[in-house]
Amino acid sequence: MHLVSFMKKKTLEEKIRQVGFWTFGGVFWYLIIAFFLKSSHPIYEYNLDRTAAYDVIKDALTLAAAFLAPVAAFVLFTDWRDQHKAVKNEKISEEILRILNGDLLVFYNLIPIDLRSTDKFKEKNILFHRLVAELANKANEIQIVDDESLNFKNTILSFEEDLYGLWDSLSRQVHAAQQHESIAEFLDTVSCNKKILLSEMWEQSAEENQAHFERIQSKLRLLKPLCI
Image (cartoon, rainbow, N blue to C red; front, side, top):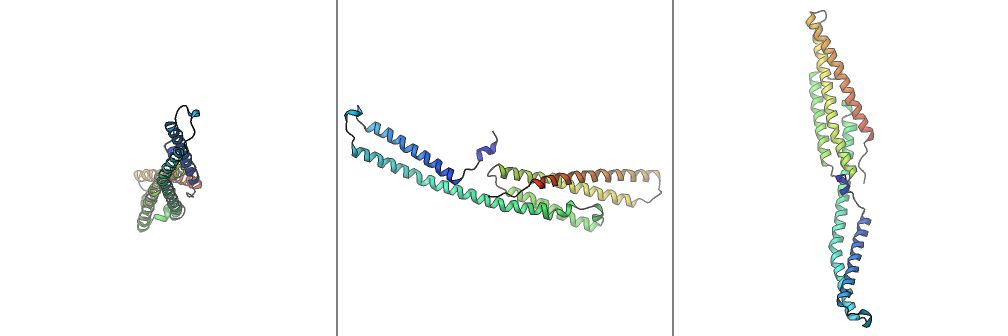
């Protein structure tokens, strides 16, 4: 059985109904046992002792009230706490989707020529790693309250591999292009072979970049914020 099945949340109405069931059941069996112990035998030969019956019923109701007070408080507190977690999860999930669909959007469309400048590359590198770190921190703030929140958190954390892969493959494309351009035309065989290897590296990195991009987009299409 899946671990999260034990964590499946009940509505407040279901919880109250369950508490009522166990309370009624407890009172019922208390009355049965109490009347049995207090009655004379055989029962049909004796009249009902109304005073004893009243005391038994009063004790049963007192016990029920003593049981219900803390249980009701606990149920209401638990429901409030779950609602608080759900509201917080919804807000965090919206912030996470904003990062994935908004702040990181520029990196899905980057091409090597956009990063040829060393200063531009450093600027984008710092921004990218800050956003991915923020994404991971936000994902870890998601509180597991049901299967939906667990799946959402795991999905967000799974983005990290493809996001880093996207940036790494793009960086290798930039490096290969820069190295390729630094080699003059019509040079010796070694330089020509190096240019061929750099071109192959560029193509391989471009394919990896596209694969990471497609996986990211595939996951994004299925993602929805956690709603209460």
